[in-house]
Length: 424
Image (cartoon, rainbow, N blue to C red):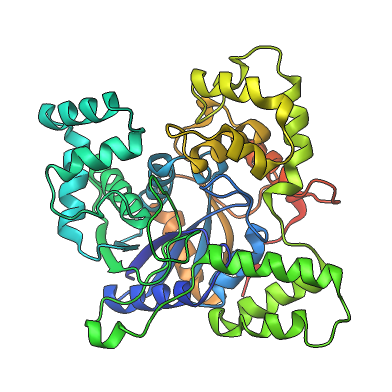
């Protein structure tokens, strides 16, 4: 059995993701696709628009065979933490032959060379990095400039999926893993930026990819980004709340999303729009503000993942001016601290994810699988160096993950222990 791994968030699952799954299977000759997916909170410091079980169902209905959950500390960490945790799960499974990821560059060799250089950090590179930091650049900008002295590809560390690709490769190299890396070019909008221009210091964990086929075959493929789809869904929700009976209103706008989503994803998101609520960071603004106001010391927040002492002081000094999650992120951010970094820091404070929780995963937690892929579960049970968990009850080591999932469902009657696997 040949197994290909994919690392994703699917927030939400759209046509680009479906294409990526199909092409990954084709390019690697995979019999099974194993997906490692972030849970209820995302790498850019925000909640998922719908919960992890809904997103796992979308993936399983569109090409995935098995979905494992990436623990929250890794799923909400920086690109390096995210990649380390996800690659650890794939490597530990003992069954994955290839890891297929999207990249803006679409070529493996420069990414491999960059990963090797960043792992070795020769003195010449470190000198370049120190000089750029002295000039006042933040770390992502300084690292990008330092790396440009060694590589001609200007977008190597400015494009979000390239950044993650390099981190995946570093994680594979650290483990001397036998997993083969495969990259396919990403076509479409960058996350959070419809112009196609890459935000400075951007980072992202969503691989919205197209095929590696010749340019003539792919030139017409431009998939909408997950962040673009989320913006449309949030706007639809607001319109529905204001004018639920307005003819030709939200219904026609929702229909416009049909081409950007597989039918199963479209149906699930439309049901959520009508019967529930799309989750957003502002839903957690009040409990975050309460937590910030509880602090008794300006360095108290430095105990949390992604929060330096300087950032802790800044958050503490500005907490009286809190008016909302997004507004506070914009207030705290500086040239040194990017929006994503601040948002992750605040999310870790809210979720009580501390520095010591930045450790490698200790179990393979299943969110869902296809019945026809039960042979994959059997192989993992035989070969994995980590326990395979299909039911959270009876596993006290999952208590932190269960607690964090409960935060996502604040205000609801919810018990993670009673949730059933998605089995199709």
